Length: 208
Image (cartoon, rainbow, N blue to C red; front, side, top):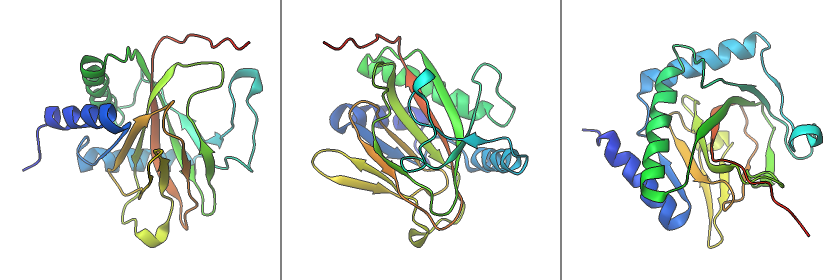
């Protein structure tokens, strides 16, 4: 029998507190994940994605030597029926993290992502240079029948060790945006995911 979601949320919060990252496959039911994957593929076939960029605002540019995937932003304010279970469970996660870790998380931004064979994202932090708004990064993987030989791992650099997470269907990687450098390794087939960031009120960094 699966553990109650409250236990899963508590385990995630505890892991973030103790080591800065967590991995779970117990947040969403498989039927909800399959519907998300189908929606992503429908949007992909309709050419509704755009090439991903690096940087923010006026400094945002396409750099295929750094990041070569494509994405489609989602709206938490007007989710599709398919997206609603995802946003509902992410809201429960936001509240649980605030209750235990006092992170001040206010909102979620997220997008579908597709990495075609050979595409990658070099080692980076998810926080922008002049903003500390992003606090917790999350990636839900939508890849059915994914094998070790398919590649496409997300690699977390924790300081003491390197963690490679296989992007199998239903797995979610969760980590602190400002603390855990990470990269996406190339895969041999299309790699599908739903990536999000919990955000707090931003305080612009001032440098001397």
